[in-house]
Length: 165
Image 1 (cartoon, rainbow, N blue to C red):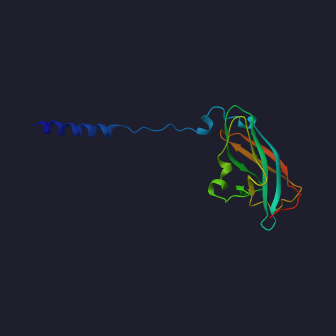
Image 2 (image 1 turned 135 degrees about the vertical axis):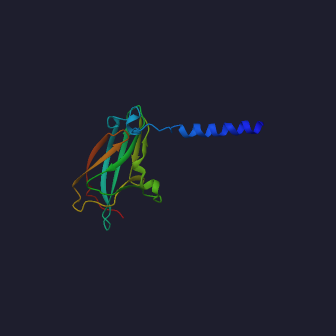
Image 3 (image 1 turned 120 degrees about the vertical axis):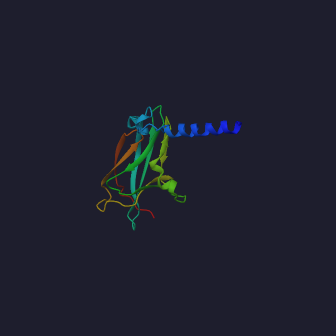
C-alpha cells in the first residue's frame, strides 16, 4: 500500500512542472551597463601613430601606435576601423598569425593607468585592403571603438619612408 501512496505524488509533481512558467534572462546591452565604460574615450590617449607601406606588391600598410589608459577603470577596445583600410587585422612581426592575433583589436583590454605600445617588430595593425587612392603623404583616419559605445578618431599621414618586405 505504501507504493500506491508514492505513485499518487508523481502525477502531482509532473502537473506542477507543466504549469510552471520558464524564467527569462533580462534583455539588456551589457556594454552600456558596466560602470565606467560610457566615456572610455576621455581616459584613453592614442599617440606615436605611424603608418607605412610594408609590402608594396600586396599594397599592405602597417599601423603602429601607443595606447594609454589614464583612467581608474579598465577599458576594452572592441574594434578599429577606417575608410582607408577596409580590412584591418592584428599582426605580430615575429610570430605566427593565429585567429587570436588577427582579432586582437576586437577584444583588447586596456588596464587602468597603463600604457600599451604597438611598435615595429611587435604587435600592430595591418591594412590588407587599402583604398586604391591611398598614397604616401596622404592622411588616413582610424576609429578606435570601446566597450560602452564611445570611440576616438586618430588621423595619421602615410609615411613616405622606404617600404619593407
